Image (tube, rainbow, N blue to C red; front, side, top):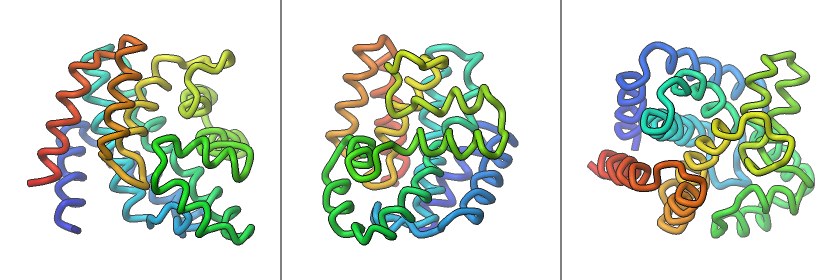
Length: 212
């Protein structure tokens, strides 16, 4: 409920300081600039902000274990990639495919693949293109562009995108902290030497906090 969202945000601010508040304000501004309905994902803007906050916490804690210097850099590229879902939602609605799209994403652990099936590209690509048009930092764009596909040969921000990929898999907007997604995230971390044991501990701590 609302109380849990407040607790999540307060926890994020205490962990990350004022930079999180700046990220939240930017995310809210973007939310108001684009279509605010996320019906194809069975979600709304409140859930968008909630899961993005959770992803920041997870990515930040994992960065503490892998490379402390990445922590501040991860704030915006962790919080902002999912804004492309507002654009995708509008396209899906215009194509009158809301119900069939949701039927697929609600059971999938690979939402990016469902997005590609319906519109040809995934969220992180849409977000990167949008930010390029807005003239935002090239580093930020590089950090975001291949979050859904970190192994892409053109990826210039491998470690950053891998950490965000893990956080987004667990803290996704359709079914955050789904057991199957958690298992896949930990296995991905193991395959890519991203401190899988520490990740599992972080996930369990966050789940316990959310269930209080």
